[in-house]
Length: 314
Image (cartoon, rainbow, N blue to C red):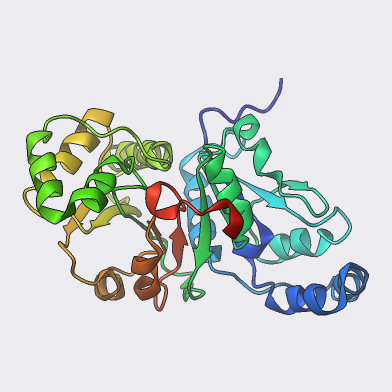
């Protein structure tokens, strides 16, 4: 029987998002591929240190204790531009950090994001901005990791995930109204369409997969009252009243939920992140991430009009 992925939460992770590759990347840029290959072989026994998405991935994988070991809820697959030989250090580091990742695709000098649909992936994270932009342009849910490596308290099992709304969970149709007509036209448009759900954005299906795990947690709590819920999901959006209503209606219509919502109306998201302390935050606007990435592992989703790049700048 083939191993099925369709009903699991499947995340693709580039080695550049999972580990800190600054030193080896410097060798590649300054000395070329052969020197990089030699460097990785000489450092094969040196475990790579955690990268921006490490804490998020570790905590996500820990949720597999809610299922039978042969039927995990979460599958994380390494998608790497390394060839199999230079990728050995990545997989040894995965083992050294006790991450339950056993599947990987290594494609020398090429991004394997094209295999996301075949692997039922609802998210791909990478520190390679070009790969992420190409994936999103192909209609795939990908994000460019930014910001610091979060402190990863191994005694804390919680997983806090935060999303912007427009251009991330929802399409950027309302953002286009704002860009064309300003804040008053945006508000009038959202009030007039308050009961009409948005079209889904690139990470709507990822939230759906997270919600399935949250339902598994609820089932566990019903059967085991001592169980403490670990997954917490928030939306942190520049929307405020009355535009907030359409966001709530959209989530309800999609059959999805979040635990918390921050309708900020232009308040700095970075200040909120310092208190909320999510293990990862997704936003489509780089201007917001400049603030959040100072303290919070952040992910740029280069989706929609605000992220359209002229061909001459690609």
